[in-house]
Length: 357
Image (tube, rainbow, N blue to C red; front, side):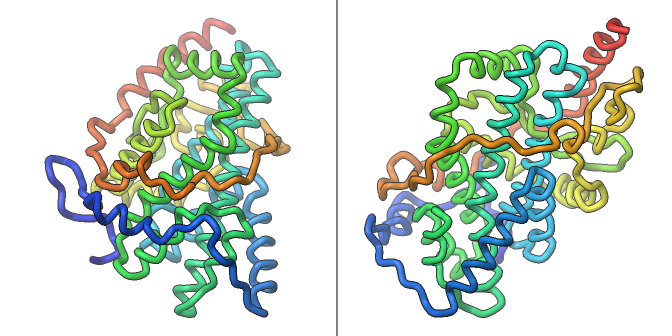
């Protein structure tokens, strides 16, 4: 199979693996696998650590690294999805200090929300980027030492999927495995502890249900104000709902009507985390412009990254039962054009904002 999204679609669903193959691919897992290192691994490990630290400085650097990698290795579909979702994480970070929320959300909650978003965004990069670097090494040299990933606390879940990708070139399966891995990772290390904080969860559900601010948006088409594709994410507290949403977002982003123009947008519009990046007629990164909604750049809203501590435990314990169904198929995304919905929403925001002056 070529290194692209699977082309066989059944009733809108893209099949991945039958249950027997899912179990077979995960069969080699052992809790106490031997870890082997070779003399030149120390130098390689030091390089990987340095590059991961540099790339993980903030949302802007992470987002840029993803795009740079995708330009060199477009067969790794997940990395472009990660780039676009990371852009959205940046938008939510700056929304906390923008027109709509800065005046109604307590300063303490703004800071704690930013810490949560920053920590999740950073944890995913910290886990994924060493995998990407080892893939690049394998592609260049024909070999690499996957045991190095244990030094970065990367889940043992991912190794058989990379090995399967080397054999089949199945981008859809690898992308699905990486979506599962990233969501299970932040669920076990971050979200489960964070959801115990009642003040934050109350605000999360207010934002999600009342304000509709949990959309993941992919700008596409011609600028300056682009069309928007994507999904509204419901049930953030349910990791399986997030995994299914991630798979649908993958379908949307690589839809033939979306992918190329969305990639063109990403290449032409440097990510600043201000929503002005995609709708400059509606949003402005200058607070004095009363005809637009204020959407600051990340460097103006949050000059310093604030992260929460989290454990480094492996989420996967060798039991495929809870994630088996996610590896069998990618569901159809349903309706994914959000332009009209967002224009209506921001029109209401602009009217509300103008009354404050």
